[in-house]
Length: 303
Ligand SMILES: [Zn+2]
Ligand SMILES: [Zn+2]
Image (tube, rainbow, N blue to C red; front, side, top):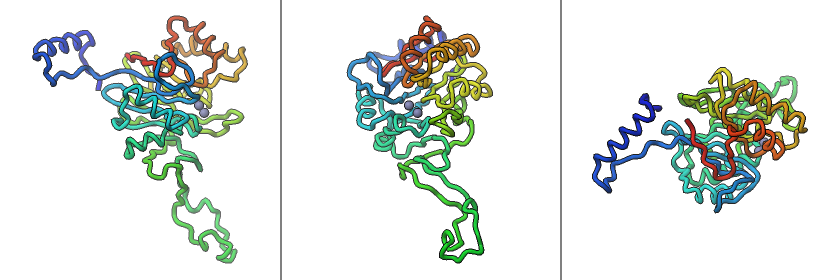
C-alpha cells in the first residue's frame, strides 16, 4: 500500500532510520521498488540479454510483484530473467495478455519455478488456457437413438475443455476486473481481420499521477483499450508495451500517434514489441522528451 507520507519525508525518515542502525546491521530495509522491467523484446541495448520477438515485463509496485506475459521461448525467457537477477518464485500473480505464442511460451518456465502461481488470462470459448461450457450447449435431439447421442444422451452438467498447461492455476477473466486494490485487468475483444474475436487483457496500475497501462499486442486497437480503461482511472499517465502498428500505413500511424498525444494526453510513452519501427519513429517525434525508451532490459521507474 502506498504510504500517506510525502516521498521526501519518507526518504528523510528512512535516512534517519539508517543513521540510527549500526553499520552492517541486517534490519534496514530499503523502500520497495516502484518500477517496470522489460524481460522480453526484440530490441534493447542492455548487454547480457537475448533479444527475441515477443513480450514480457515485471511490475513491482506498492509492494506487489506482477508478471505480465512470458515471451516467445521458455529458454530465452529463463535466461533473461536469470541474467536480470529476477526471482519469479516470488510473485503475487501473473497476467497473460492473449493466447499468441510470443506471449505464452515462457509459461513453461514460470510454472517450473512457481507451480502454484495464479495466472490471469482471458476467457476463450475453446483455447489454450482451458474453458468450460454448460452441457446444454450440445443442443439435444431426444428422438435419436442413444448410440448417436453425445454421452448416450446424458451429458455432464458442465463440459470442461483442456488447457495446454493442465497443472496451471488459470483465473479466466471475462470482463474488466480489479484483481487487488489499485491493480486491474481490462478486457477488450478484437474486431480486426486476422485476430477477429481474439480477447486480450491489458494491465492497469493506479498511481498518484494516473494509470500505468501495460499492453501486450493491442490487437483490439490501442484506442479501444484506452476507452475501456476510462471507468478505472480516467487518465493514462504511462503506456508501456506493444501497439501493433508494425504493418500499419504511415498515415494511420500519424493519426494514432497524434490521438495518443492530443486526445488521450498520455504523459509518458514507452512503446515496445509489435509497435513497429515506423511507429517508434513517429511516436518519438510526437512525444519528444516524454518518449521513454523501453527495450529489453530497460527499467522504467514509476511514480
Ligand atoms: Zn498477439
Ligand atoms: Zn505479440
